[in-house]
Image 1: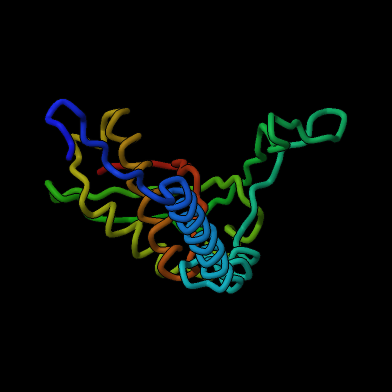
Image 2: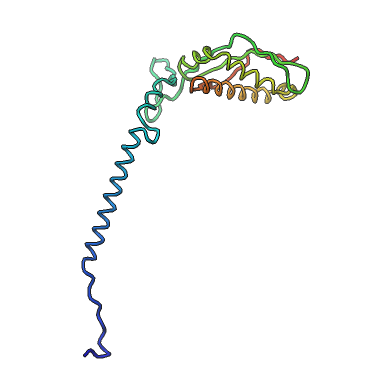
Length: 188
């Protein structure tokens, strides 16, 4: 018989290290399998990273790097162009709209700039009617006392840029207008 003074020793657990190694190996297999499945799903287009999207992006306008005096484009870290060339386009017909707060009206002529290739300007020309409509809707919401100030004119330029880009995005899937400029501006 065992005396009360002798400690009771529990039997050793068999295979403790083996169980931990087996669980670790199983977790590793699941992680690698999950990563491989995720990469496969992304390439197959299940998460929007498919090959169809890559072909659509090929048709979108590209940024145009500015060439320096030696004819080479300046490059920043990572090989990306450090500066881009702006292209300008003046919309031929002026815009006339009533003002929101008075019986007066405004007449403006605008031009736009883009840092993208000529496709943006071609899209602008091809979709002139929806662009003109968006500009006129924006102008008709203006108040004379606001747009008579320099800050008001700058805010209007921003609103016009957003309206033009929204119209182009709806029609072509890409905006690309970086700035709007007034070439004439009359309030009466």
